Image 1: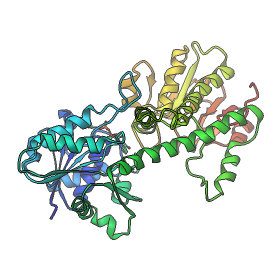
Image 2: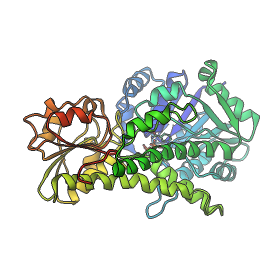
Image 3: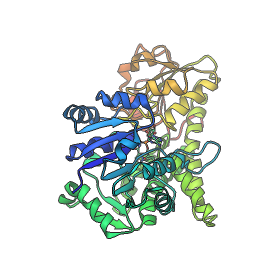
Image 4: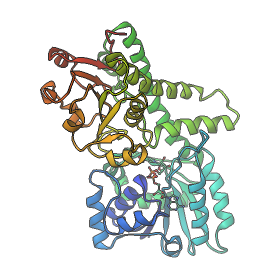
Length: 442
Ligand SMILES: NC(=O)c1ccc[n+]([C@@H]2O[C@H](COP(=O)([O-])OP(=O)(O)OC[C@H]3O[C@@H](n4cnc5c(N)ncnc54)[C@H](O)[C@@H]3O)[C@@H](O)[C@H]2O)c1
């Protein structure tokens, strides 16, 4: 019977997974190389923003069912299952995935494990990794100890991470033995009792399911944004277009929201890593379309800056409010954030930039300390020559012209997420630009 679980890496994925495993009744230890993170988690404090997770962590730390350590050896002799949830960022100076953290964690675990156990990779990795790690683990593990390996990619969405982990829409496990699949069925018995689809497959398929899902989502976003480039040129309404094609059940409306595009710690680096891996396999052209999706996505950021220049002329010394620098609402994650990139580009063009994000300011300030960071929307918009909405937080979506009347210096608004009602703002005397909509000065 599975009782003890370790989770290696306690970032967005690992901290969530550890807390949810404790919620399911297992005894859990989270391991990380960052002592500050471990110290905070041990006090029941979450070092990042994720709705519902602080309560879960506190409850299970208090009950003693969830603990944290930097000591890998301590879990090697204790856990039945070890989940690997460390980062796989883009290589610095390259487009492939940096596998250093996964390789270090797997080799370290293999050496630390002193009783039969299963290592389960959850990180997003290039296809071929699981098979390679299985051999690495076999070489590094102690004699007489069976250390098996499985891959179980994670599909959680930041902002909904707890719900997605406890109530996943599917579970995918890649194993090379029925015994290891059975062990994972035991871990996920709760979800299985609710008839969650269970996809049991080989290593390669499991690894590819994750990157294929991300590639598809990125493509869907860039697809509608490519049409935005067209409607910006000829006129037309991108939202109506998205609604109309979305009514087709084969297409669906989700992920067809035109705007400043995707970002975050997953989609951008995952589509680049997939192209790189597939090229390494000798399939030079197969994933080339993803490069096009990446370019469409990055061009949206240029478009925001161009529109700002069309509205204000030279940006030097102009005051611009940027609303939203986390890569999406309900998160403080600013990795590859379109809003933060836009804020920085506006700053580099000479503008004085004031940023407000309900959760992302602190992380953004670590990355770009020269931007102005303020605690409220109205402080950001105070005396602004232009207000730019870059992340669709509810408080920004609820904005009306009256909220900014008498606050801004000039009535100029750029809705880079296509979430506000143009007629309402134009009716109130604003110059109102949206991505995906023809702008009179084009
Ligand atoms: N964030 C998401 O929404 C999400 C969703 C699905 C999949 N993923 C994938 O999950 C993985 C982790 O992503 P994340 O967003 O949680 O990253 P993260 O950067 O928030 O967390 C990674 C953690 O791993 C720790 N770490 C690095 N090397 C270690 C080692 N040898 N031993 C112990 N800890 C170590 C780091 O200190 C860090 O705390 C990535 O492969 C990512 O693509 C993330």
